[in-house]
Length: 160
Image (cartoon, rainbow, N blue to C red; front, side, top):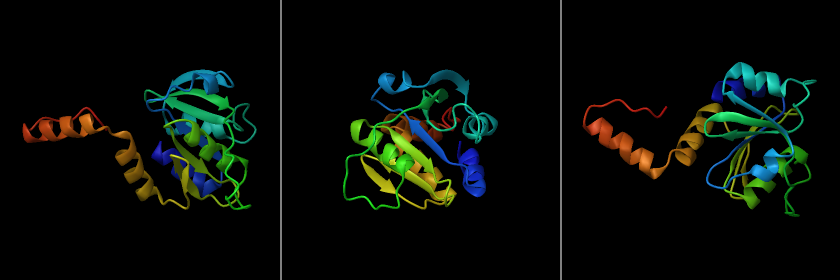
């Protein structure tokens, strides 16, 4: 996922990726097309390729898979946001106000990567920082403890 986002940033390909966590986003999934595919750089690139049928909507990542694409998200009602933020960013913030999802946004105008969590937007995130955010936000405390315990026993982790 990180590699695909890095490539889209470099080519200024707009993207909106919603990573579902505890809150199930079935109502959002119903606005798009279920694809239920393995995550790969190529698959993400194909979905967001300009001119592709599903490129304008959001992708929903569920259970480590690209579950749905072309999804419509609710826009934030926050009036304090700058005018430079477009619909993609406002939708990314909006879904994080309505759920515990984490959203990655790539601006087609600037190529900048942004991350939205809990109604807050972090802009111009570099790819190294993006990986840190994804790991800290998506690896649960139980997984961290399990990895630590496995490490102490000399076992390899299944979590990547």
